[in-house]
Amino acid sequence: MLGFTNIAVGIVLSHDNSSVYITKRKKDVDWANYLEFPGGKAYLNESTLNCLKRELYEEININPIIVTPYFSKIVSKKGIILNFF
Image 1 (cartoon, rainbow, N blue to C red):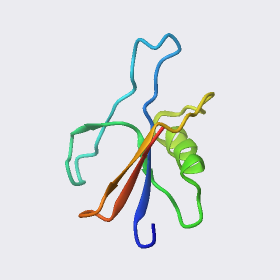
Image 2 (image 1 turned 135 degrees about the horizontal axis):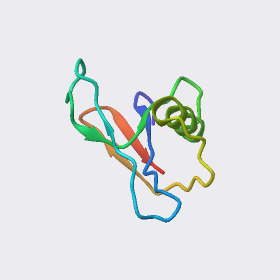
Image 3 (image 1 turned 90 degrees about the vertical axis):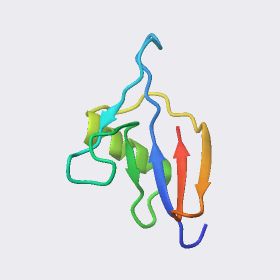
Image 4 (image 1 turned 90 degrees about the horizontal axis):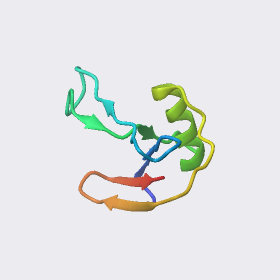
């Protein structure tokens, strides 16, 4: 959507599906020290899939093997689209 920021969110499972990766937000940002799924904002002209792969490598040092779109959520008040994989 025009004017909205695309955010890729990774729901990353362990190989045996027994664990989910969670990250902790930095101390100097909004919602400091809260837990969240790894992910981040897509660059201009970057697909959400490529954004997700980049963010997963930057944040938790993994290259995903299987990536499946799960759902998207438009948050109009914040001007963002959350894309869960």
